[in-house]
Image (cartoon, rainbow, N blue to C red; front, side):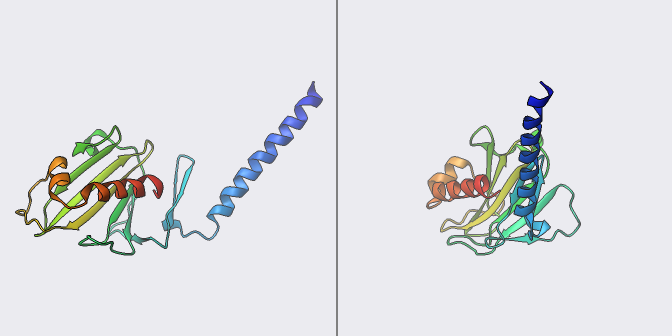
Length: 171
């Protein structure tokens, strides 16, 4: 019986070594600002699409990225924050879209609306901030409900779906 366990031990050792070698190979040459490891999950942020934003003070709990290119209809580049901790209830603010997605919209600048989308990913969470150009001119500091956002801002459902796709697939 002792002899039969030896091939299994050798096989499992080879699998473990291959897995570790694969992780090291995948992270080889990746700027640490673009590599995020959370409880065994490794995320590599595309340097072709996102630039790391240096914080004013070093942060142990988040990393910020700005889109390299401003997309059509955006007032500014999209900002993404990856929070390296579980999402707490006090961060689950705004209107709930799904069990793990929350949205807030408000006016800060004339002829634009700022939309924040938060997605709870279990061990960490991500937040997108986008300011969209608008023909509507709401007063500053006006909160905009999700339904008003969809009704009054051109192509907003498509923009929200695009943002959710980015947050779910790139982060």
